[in-house]
Amino acid sequence: MPHRRARERLPELIDAAIRVFQRSGYRATQMADIAREMGVSEAALYRYVDGKEGLFGLVVRRALFLEDLPDGELPLASPPLQATVSQLRELLTPAAIPPALSQALASDRVADAGAELEGIALELFSLMALTGPAMDMIEKSAREVPELAQLFIVDLRRPLLAALTSYLERRAEAGQLRRTPHPEATARLIVETVAWFSRHRLSDPDGAAIPAAAAQETVVDALRHALEPRS
Image (tube, rainbow, N blue to C red; front, side, top):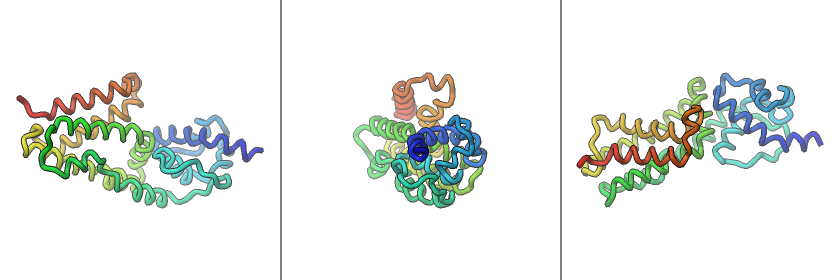
């Protein structure tokens, strides 16, 4: 019976751990912090997992919808952090450049570059909103964990920025988007704008008051009107 009750509360533990890792990152988070967030004793956490490394891996994979709740015996074993990072790299790196952007890079011209840009922005917004909790945990932890910095900055963000820069240069060369002074900086502007409105606004009291639909529409409208050629 105690084992069954522990398994029933496993989703509650995952939700509590996600919130704490989002706020504090991997290094600064202690098991006591997660226990406090969940409303149980620290000792009770060890009925579920045998350490922080395994818990971090579990909650990141769950937040990315990569696996269902594990059905093994409790407490769950803790794989090394490096094993979790390696698995995330293998799964996430092929998706660093979203499909709409990849498709746009396959052609030098399109019938409607404004609509194409809208599609790219919409897809980025949706992906960042969907994976927000997981990417918040990874990004926060990357400041202190070199392996996660490599994953977030080098393996995921830099290829996306390079692809966006190439896209902006190609459409500007064709006269279909406005030529900006610094395409690399413009690509970063796009990513950070989408990231704030899709993810980071939720950690700001005023930002969280903006409905998701309004945030998405505002981003798409602003980017299209900023980058379409001036008449």
